[in-house]
Image (cartoon, rainbow, N blue to C red):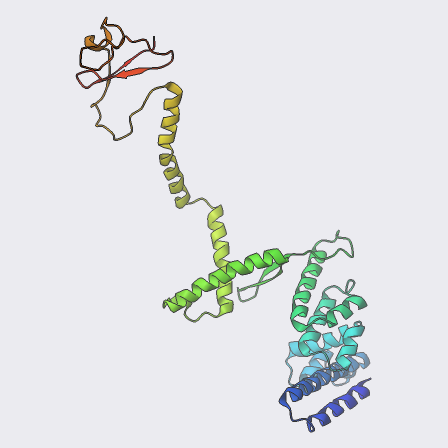
Length: 334
């Protein structure tokens, strides 16, 4: 199989000398790189199987590959892992032999199978290979997130479909945090709208000369917008001075309403606060001129226009009269 791939690689290189269109040449160059990467994986797998690395004094095929190439130790070990995983991925192997899989796609596909080998079958492999690279990135994240959920929940039955939404937050060794997640269409659009509004505000601040956001990229603005949303949610859940002030303002503003309700229940009228100075108005006993008059109703002093205080009022009502002295007096219902 490696001989056939070498012939395909040579034929692709020969075609490069016959084509001058840059758009066609870059595609052929990428195919050459893909075929060369697959040949490198095949050599690493062959050395692993026959144990040739031990004859040269190496403890692992990854160390052997790192010594004979310019790859670092982790990169060389990743090549060996990819070669091992591709043995169980027929669709990915066929595409790699044609030179159709880039290094990024091979890494994503092999990481998916490595995260959950039992669930990653041939049909899943064929479906993932057919995806464009942008969709493959999202599908790989969702697949690995679901695989992690299954590992943490041993009672979860096999074959359970992955959840529609999942977010994972983990802290790196340097103290930073890595956030990965998949949201359903509605929630994703909602979060994207909120982050877009945050980015718009930060861009406006940049135009206004705010030095704190002067050199932030759009990705950094999006991260800052997400942090701002989290801080806003925490402030809403934690009572503070602003909430106490709001409660006080609400209480003071509702005092006139409570006074009006109490007045309507008792039938009494209460003066507004601050309307008169303390002591300027009082409830006094009926005076002789207003409460002891024997004149019939409506027969007050001529020309005064003031009805007598002995007028019969409907039951449950109160009559407030103004004495000549300016004091306020009340008469009980008859």
